[in-house]
Image (cartoon, rainbow, N blue to C red; front, side, top):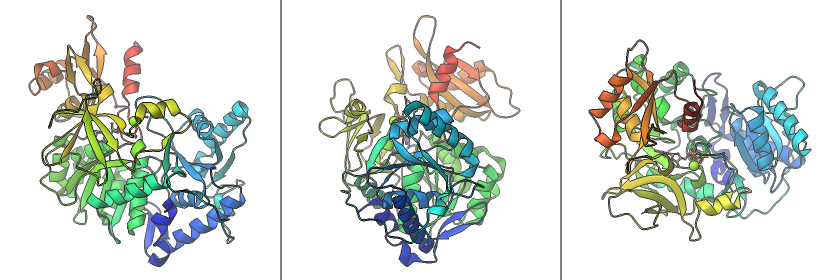
Length: 512
Ligand code: ATP
Ligand code: MG
């Protein structure tokens, strides 16, 4: 199957069932309308010259029209590359050139940066990229004007080869790379998810995760529409709107990242909500501390589990098993069906002893086709036997519960010991006067790598660096002590919820 066939295969029969609801304006697209709009826009895109091998860039916040453009592109035979609505003209231009995009679809509110990016591309490469909006903008071409009843010309795509989407990795550890995911990658991963995590027709799903990132795109959007759920679309994250929607829209499933979990644990009004419809919260994309997870579960009285994945894995390999309330704290769930995992010493390539941590290697149908235009990077990531080296350290217990320790590259090497920043961050967040925290390795006068904490105090709290260090010392082994503290206004985070340690390191190098 191709992705739009799989996801929207039952859409026409679902008719008047709401597929997408704008949680702010109430604008609704039913499954029947979605099926028709996708078909008509695909015909329009085909008439614009989009076909097999052509890339359409989608640069938009979450809207109810986002999926229409997304599936219409693949329906026309093309490939979708997605961009953060916060991207600068330079960042957009870089991705347009890298992905060889032909058309840039944006929203009227982002026309400024989108046009500036298209200008940069023309100056740099001579390529002319057509900029379209997917809402209405006075005097500007909209994809709505492309809708037509004509046929999409026939084409032939091998699902195992044809690239359906070209998302970019988050750029947490280096430059964002275009990840080629085939129709089969995405479709099989959707099947694998359903082996452990079930969504049914009539479920109501809140969408504050950005659709441009693989987690929101696949685990949330594709999976919800495949199963006949209704997606409540939030164009941006606004706390009050989010909380109102959770209650008013009788949300059954929320897919979140750790920063929102932090809000749910610490924000004063959250306890007053009636969330009796909420069946499950899944948290992924970055480490979630066990204490935080328990605090939110207690406060909301709801089942919370994690999932693990990466853009290169379409994106999933592990998820909380529905109804499994015996899961140990901080567990990312069980391994997906038809997926193989190894834990390996990254230096020697030897398998870790049972129960011991190692670098997580994955083999399965969800492993990406490769990085677009970067064969060396692909070879460094996926070895000749097809194992993808995730760069994450993991362990598994005897019951098949998996845990992510941290990224291999983030581990701080303190005098021959290894310290995981995620563990220290979890400890810091347990302090009642700490609103948020991040830890990186820095170098002391003797050139030892030591853990340094960046700490955001709770409003009104008085907190000294000394007190923070003492607090941590009381809770961890001596070699894991936080040895430096800096107070900061906010922890820099990506739209996908990850701590941008790169920015903290940069700040470290730039003297105040
Ligand atoms: P780049 O590869 O460009 O540096 P990135 O790795 O952050 O960026 P993504 O593909 O969005 O880009 O993120 C995948 C990573 O997110 C994983 O490798 C892992 O480190 C982290 N991650 C995902 N889920 C979890 C989780 N449940 N717990 C801990 N870490 C997680
Ligand atoms: Mg990565």
